[in-house]
Amino acid sequence: MFLYSNTILILIFSSILIRAQQNNVCKEFIQYMTKTDGCYYNPDQNTELPDIVKRMGYPVENYTVTTDDSYILTVFRIPRPGAKPVFVQHGISVSAICFTDTLNDSLAYVLYDAGYDVWLGNFRGNRYANKHVFLNTDTLAYWNFSFHEMGKYDLKSQLGLVYEETNQKIYYIGYSMGTTASYIYNILHPEESLQKLNIMVSLAPIAYLRNMSEIFESLAELWMPLEPEISTITHGVVQQRSEFSTFLTETLCLSNTITMFICQVFTQSFVGMDLEQLRAETLPIVSVQNPDAASTKTITHYAQFVNSKRFQYFDYGRTANTRIYGDPIAPLYDISNITIPIYLMHGENDQLATMSNVENFFKDLPESTKKNGKFLVPYKKFNHLDFISAKDQKSLLYDPLVNFLKNPIL
Ligand SMILES: *[C@@H]1O[C@H](CO)[C@@H](O)[C@H](O)[C@H]1NC(C)=O
Ligand SMILES: *[C@@H]1O[C@H](CO)[C@@H](O)[C@H](O)[C@H]1NC(C)=O
Ligand SMILES: *[C@@H]1O[C@H](CO)[C@@H](O)[C@H](O)[C@H]1NC(C)=O
Ligand SMILES: *[C@@H]1O[C@H](CO)[C@@H](O)[C@H](O)[C@H]1NC(C)=O
Ligand SMILES: *[C@@H]1O[C@H](CO)[C@@H](O)[C@H](O)[C@H]1NC(C)=O
Image (cartoon, rainbow, N blue to C red):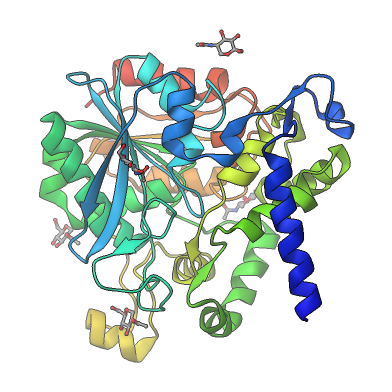
């Protein structure tokens, strides 16, 4: 055991040393066999969001907010004071870095270049939001949250900050869980929403998880009985970042063209197959930088959506539900209470925000919120991860998004 852990330590240590010198990205996948021709060292793989943004030639600031339930979050800004503010909110098990780490095609730069004052939110638990006023962050009590709290508290504080700093109504852009939380924010904070938000753009919208692939149906069913054990062992958090997790990713999934291919086929068997949109030059960056912590409770809450086919509050079980909600059945999030105009942007091969889930959700939205219609990415294989890492994300999605923002029906 001692020998084993020592070996791992030495491996990690040498991988850190080597990382500082080696070519880590290549223009073409085949070049990863040797990592020589067409390859170079991109420091984005080993730095943090502000360093990446500065290296790309953009200004960057950070702000700190403390939520009403005492979580401490960082909000980043690529400032253009006086311009229209856009607030961009990431999805599950990633951080705001996912909008900055695909070279100059990243959403944050596309928005800034289009003339916006760009704000990037961070949900509780990720590396830029893992502080709390009094809770220790390795306790179950700290990780006792799902996207419900992100909508109720995190968005309230973050949007409050942006509104206070800019004195303008905000263009909200959410991706995946960033959309779920935005609906919850709107439903729970109706007056604030109307005061602070112009529009909610939903990239890969997640509210209904009724019609899922068999893989996700099975995973959601499997997860429920395992969850208590997993939560106890992990203190309620999975995929937390560490030197070790980075080392594993680099060794197992990035060492050469073949391991890269195997890992991508595995990942895409869940999110939707689209090997064509993988970008050789940024895959090692996003593979290392994007993954971040997710609370087991967040996963459970989504699994409940799949199993119950309802867009509902967290289900604590009949007894606790009665105590907490005054009803043995967890209440629905009332979609008819959504008041902010919404623009849904979705992909045909997205195995989470599936066509029928998105269409059914759109059908149920109040008429007053859906005057802008919705947008289907004009590329058949566009999957859930392509929204933040596709080779052609700019031309397929971000350019149409910027175009839409010029003249939405509000
Ligand atoms: C925020 O900015 C300060 C000052 O530039 C810096 O020291 C700090 O590391 C930044 N925080 C984050 C989370 O990037
Ligand atoms: C982005 O980078 C590419 C490759 O370096 C370059 O050809 C392109 O002009 C850049 N685009 C912008 C908008 O700066
Ligand atoms: C988590 O929150 C729920 C609801 O507020 C509460 O009933 C439960 O006791 C909390 N669990 C922990 C471990 O803090
Ligand atoms: C679920 O999706 C499949 C294909 O993804 C489709 O054929 C089926 O009609 C959908 N079912 C419902 C109830 O929407
Ligand atoms: C939703 O709207 C109804 C009717 O307008 C209202 O009675 C209810 O309190 C609202 N729900 C929430 C969670 O605000």
